[in-house]
Image (cartoon, rainbow, N blue to C red; front, side, top):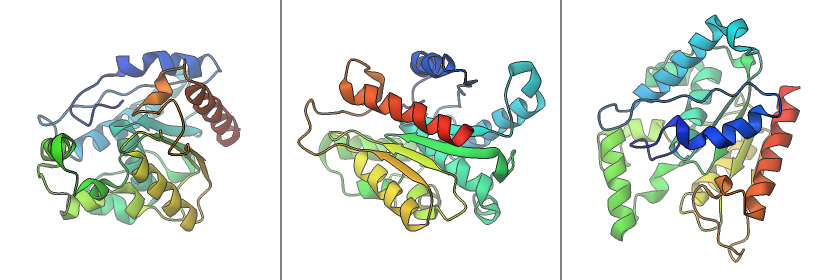
Length: 237
């Protein structure tokens, strides 16, 4: 789920989850405790705990625990993508203090819809946007500056390596987070990771705002859903 780590619930993504579930996938939406009451890296540990629970109850909830895809949008995309690094890179997991609860071979892919994967790109944001970003940063990371070691650790695009799983990255042309998605995709490609991207030209109309993929009246949203389906079919087979 999205909400900048400070808002949102699984109810927000329920319609999208049902669409994917209708394709035959078992879709599990995970709530995590919200900032500022819960701060980084607690949500990572909570999603990890959910994976542990799924492992213990796999038959009961019809989950193939050896074919997992971590997916999310906005803040949920960042959490999912960062947890994927911890799962596939033991040294990184130890550095951030998050113990993986599944093995790297169980993770088949990552889906990142409009995620903040390189937060330091927003360090110089001004006006209302800058105020909002720094407020979010203070709530989740307990700092209003993105130039802190633990924030750099949470910068997914700066941490990915060749062991990272196949990834789908999307972003709208009018979404201020899309430059982070593009940087994420570029770093994955440089690391030799299998990457699928869905971006649009700057002059594309209608302008695609943050989380446009949920508005299925839009042609671009339908294209993104089709790409999501195709990605899942490929990495899950």
